[in-house]
Amino acid sequence: MIVFPFRYQILAGLSLFAGLVFTTQAAPPNILFLLADDLAWSGTGVAMHPELPETSRNGFVDTPALARLAEEGVRFSDAYSPAPICTPTRRSIVCGMSVARQRGAEFRSLFDPSQHPTIPQALKQANPAYRTAHFGKWGEAMVATPEQCGYDVSDGETGNVTGDSADPDDPKLTGSLSRRAADFIRETVREERPFFAQVSYYAVHLAIQARPETLAKYEARGRPPRNAPSEFLAMLEELDAGVGLLLDTLDELGVADDTWVIFSSDNGGREFEKRGARYNEKLRLPTKTARQGRNPKFSLPAEYAVRLPDNEPLRGSKQLLYEGGIRVPFLVRGPGVQLGTFQRQPIVLYDLLPTFHELAGGTGPLPDTLDGSSLVPAFLGEPLPDPERIAPGQVFHRPRPLNDTGEGYSALRHRNYKLLVAWTPEGEVKRRELYDLRHDLAEQNDLSRVDPGRTERLFAKLMTYLEEVDAETATEIPGNRRE
Image (cartoon, rainbow, N blue to C red; front, side, top):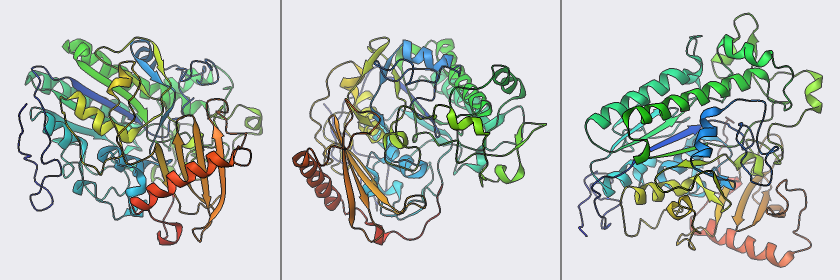
């Protein structure tokens, strides 16, 4: 094994990866990471739970590319986004750290991801040949640019409004975004270099946009069984078509067998009975207000009240730390993956940095500020070892009081159990809830009173971790807009 100096200079020339030991590979794999926006765990046409083949999917929507990924790879039924909203999740993914480490308000954060280890840096440390790119939505007020975080190619500092396209032939920019990523892949393959490409779709975040012909297809099907309206499902099918274009590109170039493909979402789905976008009925395009990213409220027809919620069978939605806000679809295809299988081990998207580092050939310990651990064994159908991480499980932290509830939240997923802590605006514990997710996926049976011992143990683990990383309390977080 060889020790290489770290060439990416940050923090006055001191490498955050200095001292890592790694080996180079004769043929390092490519990595394609596809990230949807606001996509519910049960929102695609792919069942995400082996025991819930119908309710863990939306059978009304056509997502053939995602179905192909599932058939040719592995589905993780218990995968989580680091946060129930986009920007903290995206910072967490790129740096491999829980959101609890991100001091400062969610959209006016003091956390600068370029001053911490990042995915592109980890890949180049493992093998300097990697060419890295980020296409699509970077985030709202991410503090640092993609280039400052080490990406060779990017679309720059993009956000929600960037994706609200006025071009009816390129709704949500899904088509052009996918084509740019495909061009990057072709260029890099021609150069005989391995690539890492993150494609962060603007869909299916509001405002809703889709082609007239796709809309007509879903309107002709009649009333959807879930609350997600036909327009939203049309937008989702077009996102799937973008994924399909990229899978076809890998086939065309003959590199599909050498490429890891990972698909997920930045948080859980929204509640359509409460929020949405207005439309120009003739053109089926969002109004000017919606295009500007204001996402005005609207009222669905009364019949929607009796339909299945879009996040069913999960409780809650985007913004909250119940399962509906943070459990997300997660599909993996790659060399050695068992086809059409499920993994039920809980994982979180801040595990991706160490995962990609190992896939690229990196070895040895990573910086101790990372909370994630490599998922490579789970990708290959093996049990994950007890992770050598600071976090005692999957940790989530959003203590800022929300407008709808007046509460902030923290949560810990530890094996099959989940502890949720509700905070008052003064930073005091308002209540604690304990759920056995193996037997109560919908979080309907609070066990905190019948199992006080486990509740106390998990609470102690969570609080110890939050204190160790100096996580903010509700009283320390300045006023902040909601996304």
